[in-house]
Structures are given as C-alpha cells and as structure tokens.
Amino acid sequence: MPNLLSRLIDPWYPATAIGLEMGVASVVQLERIKGALCKLRRAATFNIAESLVRPSFEDRNIDDVGQLAAVLKDLATSAGLLKQKRWSLSLPEATARTLVLTIEGQTQSSSELQEVLRWKIERGFGGALEELLVSKDKLQRDAQGRDRYLVIAVKRAVLAEYEAVLDSLGWRAGLILPRHLGEAQWLIRNGAAVGDSLLLSGSSHGFTGVIFRDKHPLIVRTVKCTEEEFEDEFYRLLLFYRDRSAPESGNEQGLSRLMVIGDGITKERASEIVNETNGSDLRPLDAEELGLQLPSHDFSFDSIAAPAGLATLSW
Image (cartoon, rainbow, N blue to C red; front, side, top):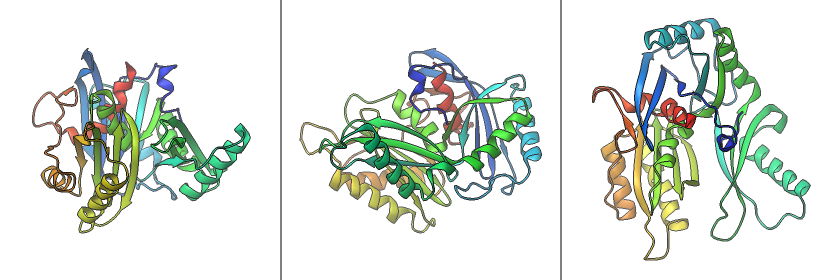
C-alpha cells in the first residue's frame, strides 16, 4: 500500500479516483482552481447490488471480478473518463483498518522498535504481519512525550481482489486508502489555525471518528454498532476526547470544525451531540466550505467525498 505521506516525495498521484462501498460505486475527476480550492470536473455515481462488493477485513470482498469491472467501465464511460488509466482508489470502510499506536517508554534500538511495532500491529489488527500490507507513519508525540504512529492495514489477499479488478481494465492504482482517510483530506487540506477538527464517517454498520490536531490524527476510533447504538457510541468517543485529549489551557480551543459524512445519523443530530458534549456551537461543514465546488446543490458530496479527497493529492 502506498505510504500515506509519500506524496511529499512522490507527488504524481492522479486527479481521478474511484470510490467503492457496499451498494455504491463512484468515479471523480477534480480540477484545481486556486490554492486549496478545486471543482468537480467529471463525476458519476451508481447504486450497485450489495452482493457485488461485500466489505470485510477478514473475508473475500468480491465474488465476481468481471462483473465489478464491467460496472466500473460503465461508470467511467458515463463520466467521460474511460480513457483514464491511472487512478486512486478509496476502499470500503470495513476492508481496511486504521490505528494510532503509542509506544510506551523508550526503545533502545531500531530493531527493538520494529519488534514493538510488530507486536502492537499484530495484536491491534488480529493477524500475522505476513498476511497484512501495512503503511505506517510517525506522528507528533503525545502530551506525555510518547512516540505515536498512524498505521493502516489491509489483508494482502483482500487487496489483491481489488487490484485484479483494475488490472482487468488495464488501470493502475497509484494510491489506495480506506474511505475515512480519503474524506479526511478535506480537513487536512483546509486546516484551521486553531482548534481540533472532527470527522464522523458513518454507515448503517457503525462509524469511524477521526480527531485531528495541527492536521495530524489525534484519535482514530472505528466502532461497529447498530443504528440504535450509534448515538451512545458517538457520545463515548466525544467523552474520551473531552476527558483525555481536549486542550487544558483556556487559551487553546477544542473542537473548532466538524465534518459529517455518510449514514447512521443525521448531520443535525451529530452536531447537537458534539455541542452538548463539548460546550461548542458547531455545525457540519459543507463541500464549498471544505474547498470543493459542486456543479449543483443536487449533487451529493457524501457520495464522492472519499475518492474526491484522494484526487486532491494530485497537487
């Protein structure tokens, strides 16, 4: 899996991207306007059979490679992007996993650090390292001065299924990341001068919540839950942030921006919970506030936020 931050030394990612989730497939092409502002140049979204992509970290995701390839070909054709060969790919949320690992104490050598990371990765993801394709990046140290790492993992066998679909079309993926990290690019690109940012990426099966400080992940939490349990689990995430990670100084601002994407909870209810828990007055940011001009208000930002976020990495 390409390194999340490797664009700093290898910036040649395409402005075209594919997004896949259970029941939905999308393709996008972005055009930069000025600074962090861009617009949707071409896009298409199809509702697909839920049996076509069955997101799972452990199990097979795609039963019929040829059928999914045919869907993506039709999708690219309808968007006028059939000639594109280079893409980024936003994986379904349940297919990949993301953790922030904290290293307790000081390691004595590089080899000792790698052993500690290996143990934490295998324990955190529930699989042998040889079965996983892992990307890890060092983050800013926490308030106690401990080293932290952002780690993304996908099973090699599962990723090979998606690569087989692209290969059958003669396409190549330069960047592959889970859905929430594609969506998170909108907050990272448009970082606030002060305060933390919260991404809530929801579905009917749960949510991933990511809190950023200085454009770096502070908390990453993926929760599997029913729609009835969604609000309680979201409260728990916010309470954990408030009690463990919120700024203690009165001169520092806590949550200052909120991005809510997907299903499971309405944007209005999510903002109510955030404001009740953190004493803030936030509302979810829309596409234009995050730096994306959509062709019309009828076009759903939620449906293309993840692949479009990956497409912004082309500049």
